[in-house]
Amino acid sequence: MKKGNKASNLIKTELYLGKGVPGGFEVTEQQFAEFIKKIITKYFPQGITVYEAYGQMQEPDKTITKQATWVVEIVRAKTAENDKKIKLIVDDYRKEFQSPQAMWTDSAVKARFYTHE
Image 1: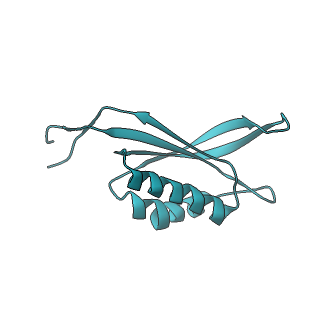
Image 2 (image 1 turned 60 degrees about the horizontal axis):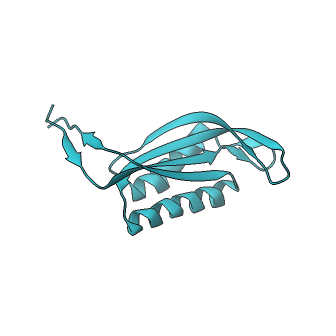
């Protein structure tokens, strides 16, 4: 394994994409895998991490909504172009699955990447 290359000016973006869709259905694993292949990989082919989570949020009327969620983590350069790509992913997800529940967070990270070379 090659020694890690430290990258600077990186952030970790986390996208929380609600699985619930109108009519009481959920985005399936197969549907989400296709979304990753068709949309997310197009914008960030270098790599992502995806896992399922459970979350809740308070609605404007103070009720609590609970649902299963897809979490997508992307370590990326903090650029306006990459921010635009993240927004497109969120917009595409909401459009494709009619799901208004989405959240985008960014945090600074120190990353070291290791390769097989």
